[in-house]
Image (tube, rainbow, N blue to C red; front, side, top):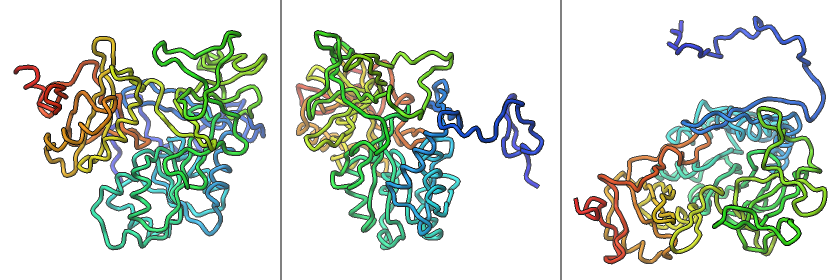
Length: 423
């Protein structure tokens, strides 16, 4: 018999619960039949952050499930491979939900393991794989194999795929399609790059989702730009702005109330015209001349450097062109009223950085995309959604110590931080 795990006080092993012995609340209705009713509550948070409740309505779950099934063309001929945790929205709402309503077979992995990924995909005959964040980059980090492009996968679908990974996946794993989704945390704005023609783009609004607009934002003042009559100003093509999703005409996909039943302060009333309501996301996007949207950064990650405004994501993308980097994470530290970019790098094979080569590479970068500090470490901590956990990496002070290097503008090179400090 399996030995029961030792659990701390107040923690219950859910697999040990007998569902038949759990009494249901007297007011519970097995099938209320209303789209706006609560279907589930997902707890979302970083490892060191307070959990935040995400209230998922029946209609939001149905919208996510049917939307992913339709966009991916799921049918009984498909086997969906899901190695995302089911407590994550992408796992529960998109991968599991899409597979169920598409009538597909489901292969649920106990976790994402690059070493066993392809063996399991081939064993189950998986045709559609749902990804999140940097998951596919981890597959590319594995040693190449002669069978890399001999697999049953016809489609990778998910969110957070960067353009450099997109290109390498197509080069290495054969004739496979990629479908990139974007869904705001609140579930109002949903975008999909259905054609895959623009690698790295988020695409356009999924039919049935809320209307979206990009509002002009003053990043220096940290406030929305308003016209003389107090209305928000819509961004021009290629201009970074804050994403808003229309809330006054939306379907009941999600509750806009907080834990105390109050309307969120991110609800903008009379934003563009009298009587309208728009929900303010925390993401910065841009729209190209064709009407396709591109992710720029999280609002709180935009840096005001001495060389101008820059997204941490754009610095990371620039660094990935340096071939020795396995993972790159950028954040900012305050210095004399500006933000200085700090890049945390994990290198191939964990070998020490070649400062001469890295400095030569950095000299070719635009000044605003050149990190002021470089910190090398063996690995990057990841969230359950396979995104770098920046909160665990970020420090309020410039990094110091071994493995830390600072850009010396006089030498136009990176030097050890201890040397720069005269230690």
